[in-house]
Length: 140
Image (cartoon, rainbow, N blue to C red):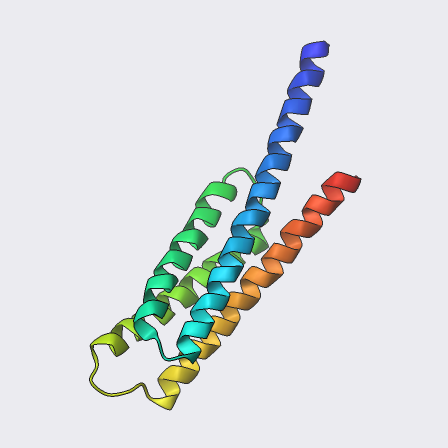
C-alpha cells in the first residue's frame, strides 16, 4: 500500500517537473521568436536565419520531448508543428536573401514579418497555456 502511494507521488512529481520544464522551454522559444522578429525588422537576415535555426531546433525539442508523454495536447502539438512550418518558410526566404545582391522585395519582407508574427503568437499562446496548467496543478 505504501509503495503504491510513493509511486503515485513520484509520478506526480515527475509530471510537475516536466510541466515546469515545458513552460520554461516555451518561454525561451518565445524570447527567441521575438529576437528573430526584431532581426527581420532591422534587416539582419543572416542573423535572423541563424536564430531561426535555433528556434526551429527548440520547436522540434518541444514537439519530440513533451508530446510523447502527453505533456501537451494534440492542439498544442499542432500549434508547434505550425510554428515549425512557419520557421522553415522564414529560413528559406532569409537564406535566399543572404546570397542575393538585390534588397528584399516588399512582398518578401511582408512574408517574413507575417511568419514572425504567427510564430511569436503561437509561443505566447502556448506559454500562457502551459503556465495555466501549472497553476491549475498547483491549486488543484
